[in-house]
Length: 434
Image 1 (cartoon, rainbow, N blue to C red):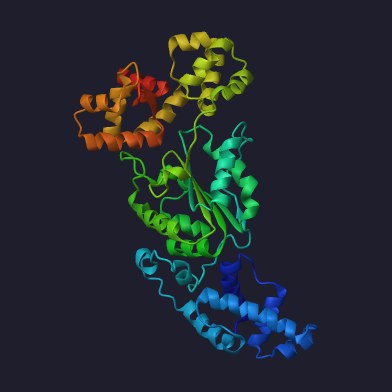
Image 2 (image 1 turned 90 degrees about the vertical axis):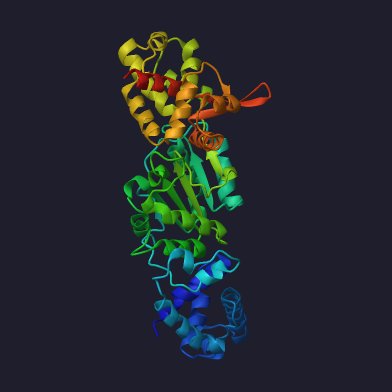
């Protein structure tokens, strides 16, 4: 009998129940039992008392019995594990994801009987090869504490960090991962811009694996997986969170993973979020506000009294402010007043906003156009009157734009109104002038 295969199986069962791997004494008991040795023989050979080994053995068999929901004991362990070993290798992998695993109270016990794939991270439990280098974030303590609570204390399965490009999502998550990675047995960072399909993504985590394999591993081990640039799995020209065809299986995966009894977490980072993440599990990352003054000070810009206007116009976005600071220094010798007077759109920022614009549906673009013509916030009621689209379509599109953080909801005279970001309004004006 192949002992290593048995150890792998028993360790998986024990880990599901206790979160711990087999210790040396448990391995000794498993080995002796497989060799048809009595507790007395094992005790004599290894210097333990027979009673002590019996107690430890009873604890191990109880763990396995409770986890597998059947009576496991020393007398039937050898025959039982041989049949289990057979079943592990005869799993029918042709079943589809939605048919092979059902969302119910026993989903983890179903998964615990399946063979685990060979995890490519097994030789290096922490695989952060795709995590970018970022300088430590300044002033995001509250956000990191919120995320840490969601992941470690609330044990949320899916947690999202959303926001516009340059707002600091990835940098924040780098800080978070470095802080909490030791709480997990396996940690991986994947940039979805590098994978054109869900199959390529799972293959990067496992050797010849499927989405179902990923579910099995997340159920059995305490994993933290970061999926960065998640917008890459969604279609352009559609409402936020509409999957590309080659990634539709991830939608089913997220549904099932949410229902599992698991200690694992998938941290999703991007411009838009999967609909499977509830709003109370999404951190919509806002700008740094007046803390951006450090960026402008480092850039040695003049007219300090006007810095707040810059910060407001560019939504406190660190990357955008770094970009325009360079433009102000190169073209206006650091004079903020001159830059604001001429209302210049930098080439780099135009490219960034164009990418956001391309992702919008036609109904979202119509709303952006309507808001850009207004000089103040407008109510949803007024927007419905301005648009020829149905109220239902307008409502869906507004929610999508709010999720993308391209418009803001503000309270005005006891009603909610919609406001377009100043830089987005300028972008539309530039677009119309071409």
